[in-house]
Length: 99
Image (cartoon, rainbow, N blue to C red; front, side, top):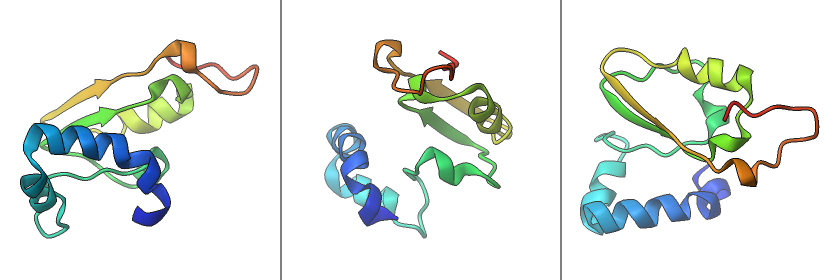
């Protein structure tokens, strides 16, 4: 999965590395540490986020059903940031974005 999505995640990694420092980011990304995880929206099913800071980026392409799925994944002590640019929405005609 990491290889497949690497080009899409590159901007996020770049920003996190700039803010946290490259070596600390690499430490946080280690699965056994589990401080930072970057995953596609489609891979959220069956998960619950607790004690987390969750960022939903590119939300201009999120449908109402997808947003409901996202919101039901949020557990206790979670801060959420949802962002997107409605002028960049590329959903098919007739499908409404939640933004």
